[in-house]
Image (cartoon, rainbow, N blue to C red):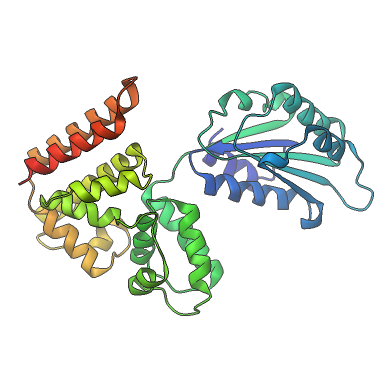
Length: 326
């Protein structure tokens, strides 16, 4: 099932004996694993097995035992690789025969876990929940919830800035919020710049500003991809940036003045908003159609052409696009 359906069931107190959480967003996988575990048992009832610590016999013993000194046995296995189906099926079965036991499988990383998900079904009183990367708006609201719990002041624009700095990685953004909360003062973009470090020495936001201004991007592009940024990730952020420019451009044509809060529902820092607007007004509808088409074709090529040198191909496409704007 997907997140929305699970949220409805969870709020209705529907409980399963075994859960599998997996998908594109590791932060949501971790968060839901912990949230469900604390609903199933007290903190001291929860046993966590991380990655290479996994030992089938130990997990079998833990789920088989009766809870003499607590209400339940809650086992969380956090893994980046598949668990053999026979072992998985037995662990789920143990939770059905032992009313004290519950099992949560926390799947992290890019392994294809879909085949394992087949073991989690209504027939075995278990469920699998697949998470996708949240939209920018959803991600900012998730970060805002974290900020509220930390009792720290931080605007939506600053959260967007921090989120983008970390290439839209929720886990890294939340880790920085934890660090910044120690300062016990409002979080500004200046504080973020001085206290936080993005995933690379090159800011993706700065790179995209240069790209759409028609400035030279060869060195920055090389450093972004050499520092380990995934080509698809860069492409996704580029298309998201184009969508932002198109939205701003359309709003300015309709209203004649910029109101970022009315466009997105929250304010961006003024310097970022003004930069976006100054770039957006350079383009017309035909330009945006061309951009969307170009990067859609690039995405299709990267995902479907076997044997393609994705790094070199991405370099070439971005350089050609940059040259076309000069």
